[in-house]
Image (tube, rainbow, N blue to C red; front, top):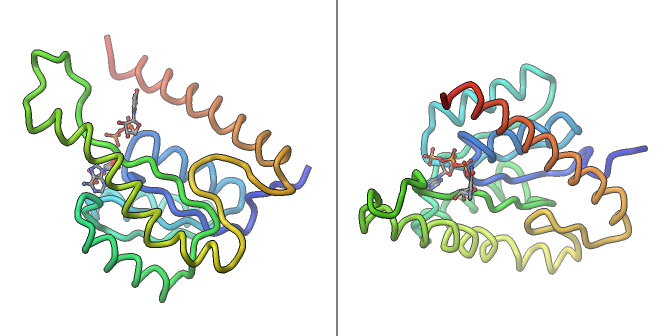
Length: 174
Ligand SMILES: NC(=O)c1ccc[n+]([C@@H]2O[C@H](COP(=O)([O-])OP(=O)(O)OC[C@H]3O[C@@H](n4cnc5c(N)ncnc54)[C@H](OP(=O)(O)O)[C@@H]3O)[C@@H](O)[C@H]2O)c1
């Protein structure tokens, strides 16, 4: 079965760690070209280098996704250097998911605001060109003639992510 992801330009937010990193690596394994966004340049470069070592393409862009102007500036660079993404995975999120009583107001606010604002800003900067082009996907929702193919790919991705997280938690939590 040919992958519907091969050759696609895939932008993943929050790609410096956790689910975003694993998602980017899995898309790369399926032949996608990756655009990686997060703030931590060093971690992002490490993820990009790992992907390139395995023969896929990846470019890292450090940006604070809570700042609309910064998102617009990085989108301009991405347009120029990489093109308009085919798939945007809005994954970036904040917070440590501590018990409520140990969560500060500041952290709680960021946990609520960041994922929504980041998804809004990132989607907003690329959506007009995707609409104009007549193709593109925001989030992991198949929506074209390759629907079944993509659904199978994405289902496998979710299962593998769940397995990786389970293994990771087993290693890091007593
Ligand atoms: N893991 C879970 O069990 C779980 C449960 C419920 C929901 N979620 C949600 O799933 C998403 C990913 O979770 P995760 O466990 O993979 O979290 P994670 O390891 O903490 O990853 C969060 C990612 O978001 C990036 N990020 C945070 N603030 C940012 C900002 N202002 N600008 C740009 N990037 C930013 C981080 O990179 P930098 O720090 O380098 O910027 C990092 O790459 C989050 O939205 C999380 O809330 C996860």
